[in-house]
Length: 150
Image (cartoon, rainbow, N blue to C red; front, side):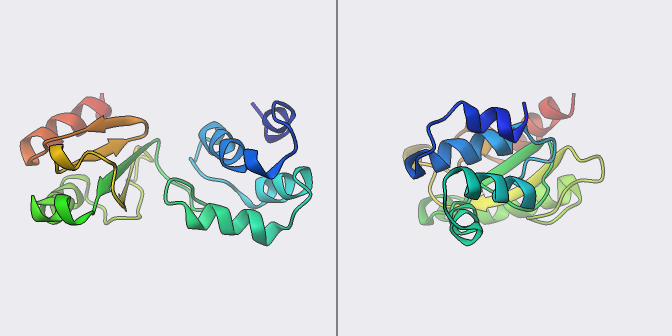
């Protein structure tokens, strides 16, 4: 689906901006919103490029940088950090041989950190795209990553 197709499915009001941006990002093979997309959204919503760009850079789930097919978002809230999220981030970086913000050479994974995912009672927590994983340790993360590799 093209950006134009996505835009025609929504009323041209600013309160639709997040839904529009998520759909555009999800339909781009590199999981990002590119410069042309931003220009089209700004024109469609009768706003500025800067305003659309500001929304994208404010929300951690949106990105202008290319990302892998699977975006691993590890919660970095205080509860998750107290229960080992920092060590789990280091484990994932070693396992995937990339640092947070990078893409694996096969374009399969990107690691990101994010604020609270709302599952503090099941910390530490991560999301891969739309799938949530809780009560994590290194063994569970290895199993999860292996599942996505297949």
